[in-house]
Length: 76
Image (cartoon, rainbow, N blue to C red):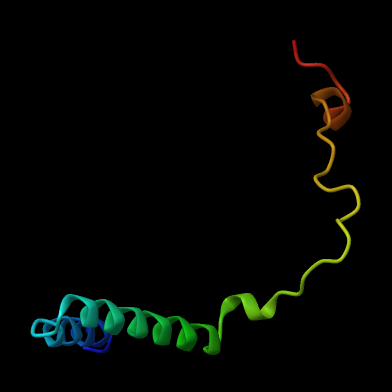
């Protein structure tokens, strides 16, 4: 059920907007999205494990070698 709880909360929120004036609906939706993005930024992310590279890697991408250089023989 946990994978559905966010969707259920979204549905409940949507239903709660039915009686609001269109401008109030818009404001409530903007506030909810802002709260969602703020919570997402504060949670752990896979991006947190990476450090920004200050210089490009040396010799990357590696040069492509021809078949002769790799195997020492030409393919006929």
